[in-house]
Image (cartoon, rainbow, N blue to C red; front, side, top):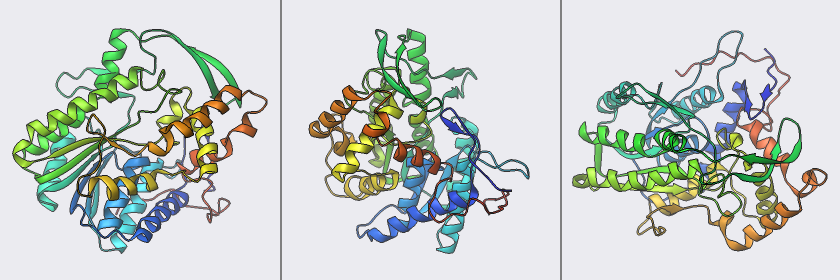
Length: 393
């Protein structure tokens, strides 16, 4: 079939297998070009491995350090009449590239929040890897089923304390407008923490530790976004922010639980980028379009793969890496420094419906959004007839 993007709101409902494969290949070539010299991880578990920062982490580990990687994801496979998800095609492409390079790569597809998948993962590690020395936690989900009670919790994107009115950009209507978000109640806050906080990360590491599959000195990190003044009301000081604060608690609990193995747990704060998760958050399409404009002018713009390469090379696998006051790795400094934020704030104050496309880099935002699903990738013939049926062998 000839596959064209089908965009609805902040999601694309299909994906292009050849485009996804080309995107994975491009990221692999970037990592190989860096020529990492320091010793890195041997056996890596990536929880949330199929898109965005999780996929970039898997690529960096495998093709930067020669690591064996086991990935966890929740993706839909294709049929003859419908494409699979982008994450399905990304994972298939990664498996193929790893196989050609002689690297171990396998993936388990299912609900990462469930204890059943945790048990299957532990069995797979014992069978194929023995122990893991790096665990990446990069999940983004709107809901979570508690594995003990069966209760389903749903996250909420709301401010905390008071209503918040701000500018936003509606990608469907190509419209800059004001939006008012009512404050979350206590249940909505607690439910968001339950879904997006550190409980599941902690549960993963606890069960891996109890099963004896964590190596001495194992490292683990969970990804977050902190942001600055413009995004704090909807991100940092909102329901998502409360959930992300819980990651700091979980990091300490993980190290205490696995202290005998000297496990190191850090939250890693990364820059704002177009991802399937960020596209759904009010304010973020406008904010990201503006930071792309500023950071590209400054020559400081980075995508997922550049951010993760820096995290591995400059934080995770270097001696005495710098951390902030909460022991977090900060890879967001090129975005959150005062000078860059001042430029972004100046554009934010000026932007209107009439000048949005002039002041922003929405074209770059939109291209990266399409890239997530394998579209608008250079070198891919989107008029060609392609087979959507791709497996993970």
